[in-house]
Amino acid sequence: VSRPPPPSQPTATSTSASNKKKGPPLRRGKWTPEEEAYANRLIQEFKAGLLPLTDGTTLRTFLSKLLNCDPMRISKKFVGNNCIGKQVFRRRTADINRLTSDQIQQSRAELSELERRFLERVAQTNRVKS
Image (cartoon, rainbow, N blue to C red; front, side, top):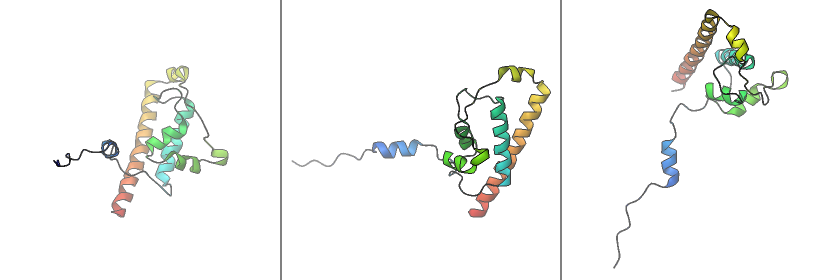
């Protein structure tokens, strides 16, 4: 007696692929001035140990996540004297505690503005492409 084939089940690969976040595609290619300004400020804050990050976070990984690009794009951008290598985050609590609330607010506002300009430029570029 032949039986009908069982109803098709999603394979492990198709299930995990559909569970991944469908965010915007990773950024590639030329860096915009807004992206460079934002990245440089993030590097400055990272090296100063003033960000709310876990100790041990690498600069390359941190930047690739915030700039939505492959970590290799970060490595290619920052070579030679600008090389970020394997720089690792270390929170500098004493330095953070010396900052006034106004200084902290100003720093956050400046970072937010750089991020806004970067994201605005990305959105403009994406509109042009589509």
